[in-house]
Image (cartoon, rainbow, N blue to C red; front, side, top):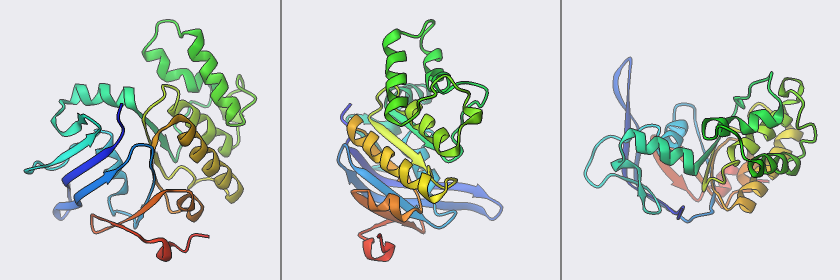
Length: 236
């Protein structure tokens, strides 16, 4: 898939106790395939909503010229079933809370999405899962993830996210629950993994170390994406 991103006239509103509230208002955004992009902003600024829009979990408010397009795939005109299928083929997602099953091994957690596609998991897919885990420093591939450190658990989640070679990788605060040394390690591994797999990577994070590894950085403020904020970030 051509993984260039094009956004046009994106508005997104939610209903809360005070009525309808506009969360996002993005007139235009273009990103080349393979870009590494960091996004930050205050709580409630719309960061997670933006990721949900980018993978088709939700749709923007209807308006003229509204468009979320990855290459030739325009999410805003797809019915829900097609968006689900598109997301399964093209998007890997990494979360702050890992979403692993602690009683399953590292291999079983990575291969879990494959059980929904295959009656019997192909050997080449097992080999890829094993190779990904080892590339990310996980040697105990048959050990239960319940005994892993949080840094190890996040690396298992990263391997699972890229198992099917997605063209888009979305990460929501992937280092927020890690200590400083693990956050640095996971940052380096996530960037290296995205580059080696050829993914477009969008990361919601407040970590300056993570932002320092990105090609571009954006701040969400009152629903708008503001760029060129390296000085404000004081990235070290």
